[in-house]
Length: 589
Figure 1 (cartoon, rainbow, N blue to C red):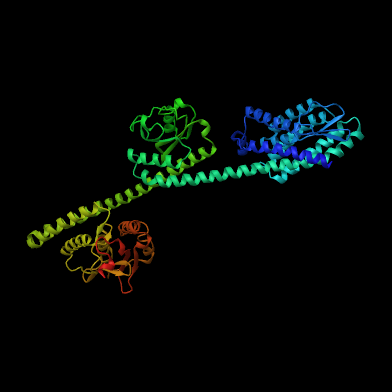
Figure 2: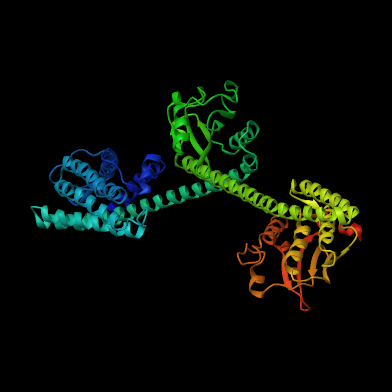
């Protein structure tokens, strides 16, 4: 028995080497996906595992009259000969990997061969093999949540298969004593060697699966890196220059590709790698598959050279990856390979992940740009609503002054012209300096004080060196306007608006206070965080200022709005001195 076990272990070692080679074959590793297989595929895998079972038969040892024969090649056996074999190893593995249909098919083929080999155990093998294949497939279905059955479960299934085989030998035998003697001789060696072999094989599959998952994780990380590197180019839009930069980047990073092309929805924008000299940027898309990708927005694999643009001997296959901006197709990335066999699951996963990442980033960039445009449009709309009202009131005041005080009317007209000119200049840009902002504010306040001579006074304390500090346009003017329209609206005289701009360490603090009526605590919590809809104003001006400040300098630059204990409202914000153009704060110190 010990000698028999050693011979079986020795021969199963060679069989496991072959099994390890099988795990390297991509077609075999498709079974790891646990997806439904077609009828044709079931026949193919049945034949594959059936042949594996036949090899296990030839790896067996002939037992005759209590002795063993270790000949390398087996011939059909006589009635007095029996075979200690590993045919059920391939059948069990087929069932565990491919399910009941594959297990049954592989068992039929292996069992038919055992019946052909004959001998004392031939009939028992022919009966047991298909049955074991179905049972192993049932076990795989029961543990369907596992991509590969664990080695411990596989070991148990292998032991059960061999025990069942021994039982069928005893049932089918004409001579019970001889059958018992045979089972005592071959039973334990076959149970040990075959069950351990099945467990080792499932361990190999798990290792292969782990390798594949590590490779997929690596490709996913690479796709993320490529997408991040390509984003600065794609943010500028799909032009010939940016498309060429993306194509060069992809060719450099994707070692398995032969060439890379980038298109928009109508023409080829760039090409890098093989066949670069045969194509001109701007050439219209002629590939039917590329047009299909643009129409459907779905990734496609081209495995025929005639469907590839451009035609070149080095380009035999391609992956066409759509680029989406939101739900709109904006272009296609074409990854070329020499042969269809060069496109594996890893390449497809990488291409799909790359396309999704680029599309997501393009969508995020588009959303970001749209948000900026909407905020700018909102501010423009606000200005368009404010200026006519301000303009009409000022013109009416000038009309009244023409007769009573022509000199003051002339001054008001000049200040109005200066205000409108400065406002148009500042609103055309995204940022302005404190110096320019103060010119706009003084022109505005000069006009307002002509209309409401005794309503308020304005005091400004501007620390030297901060004149070139960058802030959003009309920030100070709109804050002062808010104090006049809301804080001092019930004040006929004696009002005060005080603007202070000073340093506080590395930050510049802008502070505007009035001695008006303040604001209710309920509205105070929400003012600046979102537009309000209560009577007396929408708060959209303060909200816009707050959003533009945070958009330019971050959350720390948000407006801080609070009531003053003595009466009135205080609005402040802080921005870093490092944004000064020209002299920095430390130089001013």
